[in-house]
Length: 145
Length: 145
Image 1: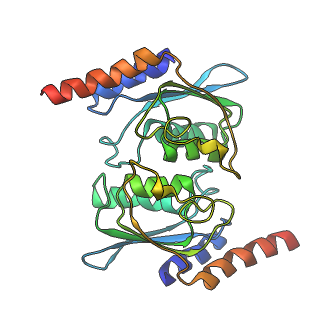
Image 2: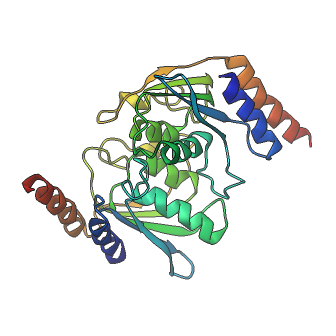
Image 3: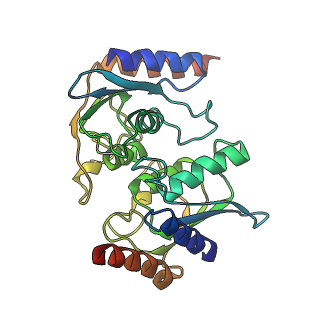
């Protein structure tokens, strides 16, 4: 999760909302790739950290599915990202802060209780305070500007 | 919707599941772009027609959001696509066939009843039989092979 936090901090330098994500191979335990929110960089409101990570990882691995991988992300995924993670069959999700506004694994809905979806294992609240503080500080500074 | 059906037929030639989508500017009524399912072409299980369309349209328009646009798609969007459509603020969705397995605007859930989501207008069942027959024929032929 510390690598995902590094990515979130990197996002701030790119003037992005600080959310970071890392994908790890379950067998080798090696990092496949790391990404962050790129809404401004890509000029695309759907370029969330998880989506950028998935698109790049499929290119790197040259596979449609990302089986036997684990995703570490600093914020609970929204509905779009949670569904995308399921579409590509990522097997485990570790997320940091809970997202009361859009978090779709636990906060506003439990998406994976919906039938017909591939269901990854989910572990929430990993390094929760660190992950949450990055976002709080970012929006606090933005308001004070 | 006929242009979206054309895209679905084009998808078959590329050995993709035949789902097509078109984005139209609400003011000029001109087509911004058209796309189809590209899971095999992109080697990415999340490359649904709507996602490919959104990514390309943001590049064409050089904007984060796709306000004042209408999406025509041959199949009811899944959760990932429905949420992505909301993220980029597409204002209207016209879909063809209902999807009992993954359709998230009406069939398995009504995603836009969830709070905190931008809510497009939704019109379902446009050219429903044509759109549904393309998929039925595709899977029938696949089974008979």
